[in-house]
Length: 244
Image (cartoon, rainbow, N blue to C red; front, side):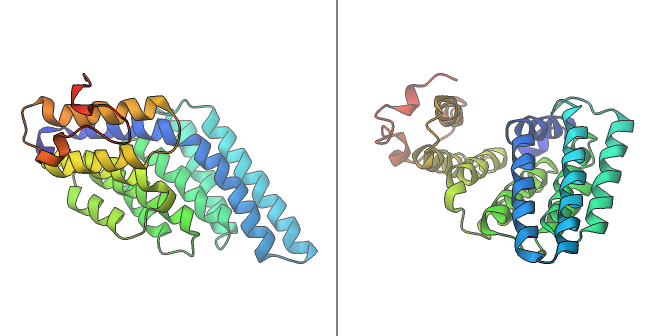
């Protein structure tokens, strides 16, 4: 089924996902980077370096704020973001700021349709010393990029390489998306069901989207396991009755 999607459609789907989970995470990682610097550098000179890195990182995020996520990025602005990210990465290579500036570069690459570069940048981060939460998030990003490139088996492998922990619902939803693209309806249904049951966000929109994806798996007349056709205990409703 994946081969029926054009590269443009894959990129647009990835941009949409990035829009949902992108900018706020980059901002949160600024705090992570600051904490990392606080533990790594102890003398006054290093504290000053931490402050300088923080300022540059925030300035880079300000550049990203000039561009709505998911829309076409101005070439000049994209170049500014990339240059700022490269400078931070070079000057503070072993810091949280240096590492997570790569996420900004990956986002720009996605906006420009350069999924190969985005994949290389994100994969390179996995070679760094990361916290558990950061690694989970980066793997999720990388998996989405690989799927957009049409590498569905690689996307699934990226997610299977780590315990999803608090990201269980998002990991399961992503697996469901990838299995659906592969035409494996039973596996997609099971993954979406797991995502729905693991979702503890309290967000009705997320639950509704997952229920719609469950319904869409069967809407085209694909077969699913008999157990998957049973009502969801967690939701107290028959998800098969949800209309897409």
